[in-house]
Length: 86
Image (tube, rainbow, N blue to C red; front, side, top):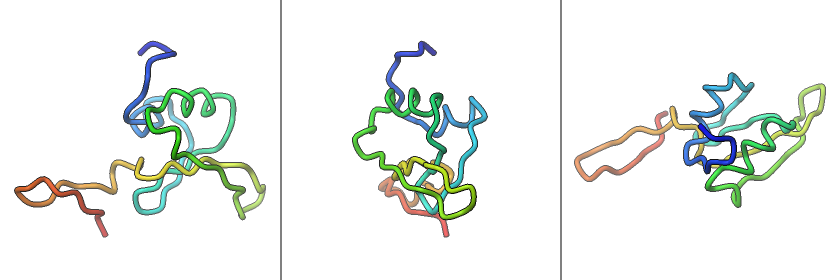
């Protein structure tokens, strides 16, 4: 993949690159660093990315990427509706 190519599934890139992550339901959390800044800048949905300071020591800055944690989603029903797995 070209380094300036737009990303639609940031989850796939996080896995491919071995980036540390956490999640809550469908939200994907990744630490803010030079590698992830470049990754988020290429993400098609970067406008919905926010940051927060972890409450766990050391209190570091993380990205909150809504709806980006793909394993939490599954197709349900014949109409292709998406629901979050419990």
